[in-house]
Amino acid sequence: QVQLVESGGGLVQAGGSLRLSCAAPGIVFSYNHMRWYRQAPGKQRESIALITSGGTTSYADFVKGRFTISRDNAKNTVYLEMNSLKPEDTAVYYCNAENILSRRNYWGQGTQVTVSS
Image 1 (spheres, helix red, strand yellow):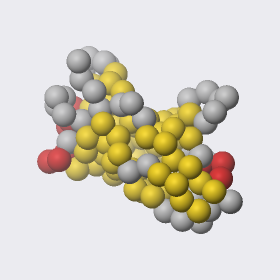
Image 2 (cartoon, one colour):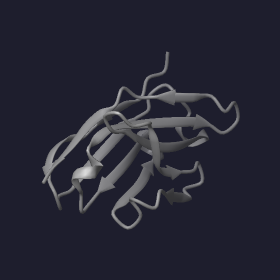
Image 3 (tube, helix red, strand yellow):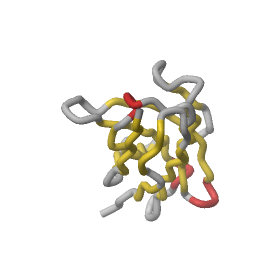
Image 4 (tube, helix red, strand yellow):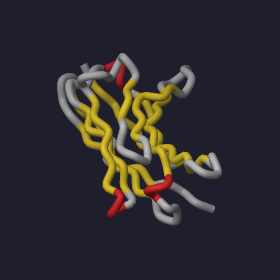
């Protein structure tokens, strides 16, 4: 059973920054598109950033210009740099891997990000 492992969440004041990491052992990392999602209490899980196997990135409008997704294929790790955080960014953040050949998806357990006003 492949399990992604997120880390880096925590409590930060509005305007602050956090860097999330997601390690992906057990998969051929370079063959996977990587995404970050988040889920706030009482809300549906939403996609916030994508980095393709080839390194192309895209973002949800509400994080564009504030968040940056990147990947290190040598370390089997994807990152999410979050700047100018707002209280509405408070959520559990999840990492997702999608194999480009099989379309199989893998998820992490999530990491809590709390932004205080």
